[in-house]
Amino acid sequence: MAREEAKKKKKGAIKQLFQIYKLTYKTNKSLPWWMLLAFLAPIGIALAICFGVRFTIAWIWVLVILCGVAVGFSVSSAVLTQLSDRAGYKRLEGQFGASPAVFSTITRGDFSFPEEPVWINRKTRDALWRGTGRAGMYLVGEGEKTRLSIEMDKQEAILRRVAPGSKIPVIRIFVGTGKGRTQISKLRGEIMRKKAVLTKMELNELNVRLTTMQAKQQGIPRNVDPNKIKVNNRMLRRRSGIDS
Image 1 (cartoon, helix red, strand yellow):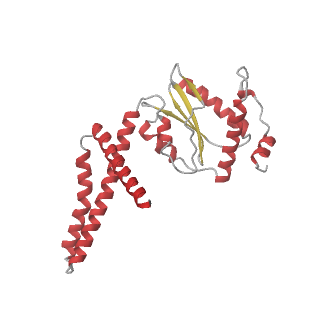
Image 2 (cartoon, one colour):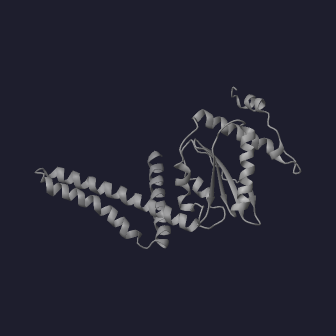
């Protein structure tokens, strides 16, 4: 049973690799040449080492060349992954709701980006996502900057009520092309390269408070403005189990 499952997984991985190759080749016709170069370069280096050192034992030649082949496969796969990511971002550029696709690639545990936006206007196709990391709270928006800025102000006001007196940074990112915007292909890097200012404990506390606030808002009637609701910090600490 274990062998059969291993074979199925191997076949599935190979099939997935071919699918990635086909999709990437549609947008990048030079893909085979880049992969071939990535595969042959380590083998060439291995041969150069063998001829340069002039090993007298045959099995050392075989071992070095096999190492070159193994490294060639790894580098070629890495090139495929890199180019497929670029092709994927290129297809996503300009599409409404593309940001969550980038969020899903951020697998580090100190980042939290729900796929559901905290605000959306389907008529104007504006959307705003809220995430957290050790750099602070992220506000990632797609759409017209003026409308997004107004909603970002509201989200920042909510943060200041949930965590009064704190100096948690609020990082605003406008996704798109043009001045003051971040292209979808650079969004992941823009999020992850921000300097960490919160400890893991402070980040956990922030996530608990925002989750509690979100749960409270779900039960608020339509006519009530959630931004005008006062949050009892002592009650939040009791619910989250965090000491003041």
